[in-house]
Length: 239
Image 1 (cartoon, rainbow, N blue to C red):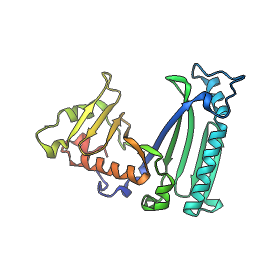
Image 2 (tube, rainbow, N blue to C red; image 1 turned 30 degrees about the vertical axis):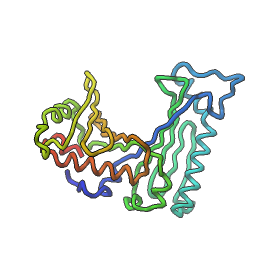
Image 3 (cartoon, rainbow, N blue to C red; image 1 turned 90 degrees about the vertical axis):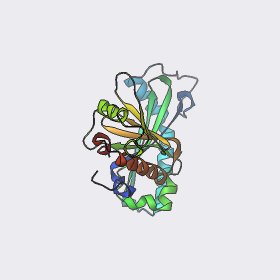
């Protein structure tokens, strides 16, 4: 595996923490019921329209995180910047990057999805800093890890299905679900309160509830331990 599964700080720079939300387009501050209509499709025009509608919410949230990060972590002007270009905003700090983005929901164009992504953590020690953890408390429900070499989804499925359920040391309680086209698969590991989606290029660990960076990283460390215990090379080598 190359890095210790026991120390979550050894891989923190390689992961992204993701939080997702959303709502009705007509509830955005920029939507005027008197002369706006709710989008019924996702295209360049309606996406640009969303960018105008969500500008106020995006700028307000970006500024909130800017001020909170400055106060909590003592950043100076040169160490922290905010760029807002609706429908996205990027908060770049000395030790991390936070991206906020709005998109229309392809399944329901009358609704929007907002994604908050924390990445490029340059200082692994931040995970242990209470002020940093508190800054993003309750914000994230998924942790995304890019697989270094990639993996065939079919190979992952076959490996899990080939585990001996009676051999606890080999199987580590892993189970798998997948659609007929095997475009991705969802893994479950005993003792880990999350589902893990693998698409061949990334692993996305999805938690049942939103948590802080420290909580999500601790959960991911448990996943690494589970995979590290298996004797099947395709699984043990994923992380």
